[in-house]
Image (cartoon, rainbow, N blue to C red; front, top):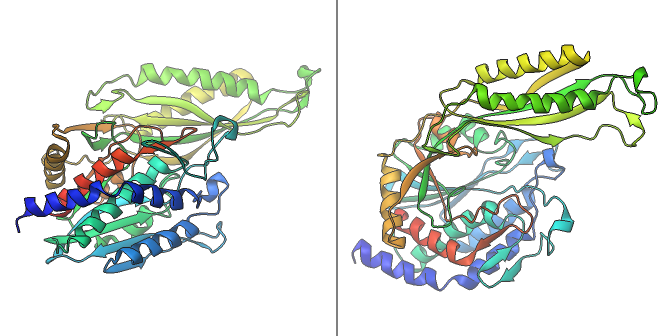
Length: 412
């Protein structure tokens, strides 16, 4: 039986998996996996659930690589590498997914319980449904169809299911690359379904550099009715947040490969300072999220931030401490001619009838860790861009389509 015939049979099976999509998503949504940085207990419970799913699927091998982390109850962050063996044991088609999710945020903005799957026609609503359950479900269904058809793939099929993607990957893929890099080979095809577009035609091959800066301003606390007796750290920090907008003009280059095609510099998280209204804060903390085009080294951006902060420091007679929460220059891009890009483009054309296009993005993905290790990786997915939002959702139809695309690549 030829590959195309095998693929057609696999697609027919996948078309019948709509209820399976709902079933798996319902189980995944019900098990939160929030990292300790966001007040959660980690990914252990979800990893146990996924291991059960993998056993039921009949994969040939499941190995767990635990990253020590004393902040979570069992002291470890789980990372799973599962494999289906093919005829060729020297090459693997890898699909990456991550276990962790972001917290639901303001529950008043949700129309339903974020940890109970809500089904509205084609939409599956719940925290994690798109980021990153959809990737995992699509990969599981592609493998399920291949196995049910009794097909022995030419190459191995691997699932890398990691922790800590949402908060830097130190306990996830970075841990694997630091301690078990040999698990991945240069000729492997690596797909990360963690970004994309509603049509499923964009393939991300490049990312911006990332710099997360913690900015602490210290003044002097006092009663709000006598501000002359203190020094308002919050006011100084607010001025600094506005002054940092000048970074947009200083680092103003454009690169149309990326969307948006510019570097971005945004104040984001704000920590609590004083609990009551009538106290002037002497301590204030906020964070700056920078996504930087590859032509700007992070050290230049960091130096300019410090220069701007020094001016505010002198103007308001406060102390300002800057610390890097996360920083990484842009990883080397995956070539648009790399085998994984070529075969994935072929799969998209076969399944959707559309031509794929390669792009760069500002959002960081674990693909950068592969690329820094000299392993070409492609980021792709049929994504509604509902991640991190209230009422996050994915679509059953997108999950089915992505399963077919992954199946095509797995059968090559």
